[in-house]
Each structure stands twice: as structure tokens, then as C-alpha cells.
Image (cartoon, rainbow, N blue to C red; front, side, top):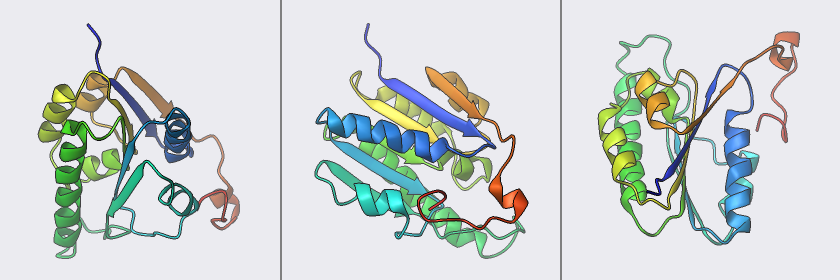
Length: 175
């Protein structure tokens, strides 16, 4: 019995989204129709969005308000929860839609680990997705339930990062 592919890129190292966008390029090269949903992120000037969102076969949407407040009890957290819930609804719709062959849920694990959205509705939609669907999930602190649901899990581990040496984010590398 054929099952949908669910790939998860998690961990504290750099490269989770980069790996996912490499897979998006591969899928588009095969003529697949793709849906990209980004959680937390709100900057539409990053290189991957500038490149991919204008290509035929890609629908792209961000459901984020940027950096989260340090205090999880901050009143500002509600706007992040509302945005993430909208992203979850869009994710479920994309997973269940026959219009997409490839669905990328970028920073989903971050939203889950900060309790912006629950994991259960997502797991149900993953189970109900078409057998031919490819789903790619990214973000730090993937919950065990998502790790169990995925058929391929890669953990990125940071050994060294330019930020630690005072190197600022750079176009073409971090954004």
C-alpha cells in the first residue's frame, strides 16, 4: 500500500528550511504543484520567497508575526496564536487538497513547540492526505508525535555558527 511521504527537518543547526527548499526545487523540476506555508516568519524579502513565490506551480503564504515575545504570557502572544491558527487551517486545507503534490510547512515545529497551535488536527490531516502527497516539515523542537508520523527525520546539529563569531545575517546565507 502506497503512503504519502512525510519528511521532517528539525534540530538546532542551520539548514532545515534550506533543505526543504532544495526539495521544493526538485519537486518543481518534476512539474509538481506546490504549496508553501510559513509559520512565525513574516519577512517577504528573504531570498527563497523572492525566488520561489513567483514561479508557476507554487502558492506561498506566510502566517507569522515575526519574533515571539520572550515572555510566553505576554499579551502580544495572542496575535501570534491567531496567525498560527490561520496557518494551521491553511495547512490542513493544503494537505487535504488534490491541487497540491508537494506541501512545505516551514517552521511548523517552532509554532508547535511554543504552543501556538495544537498538533492533533495536523496529525489527522497528515493521515488523511492522499497517498501521492509529499509533505515537508521544518523547525526546531519537533514533537515526538510528529517524529513518529514522519517516514524520514533529519536532525540538524549545530557545531559552529557565524553568529557566535559576530557575523551578521547575510543575504544569500541566512536570508
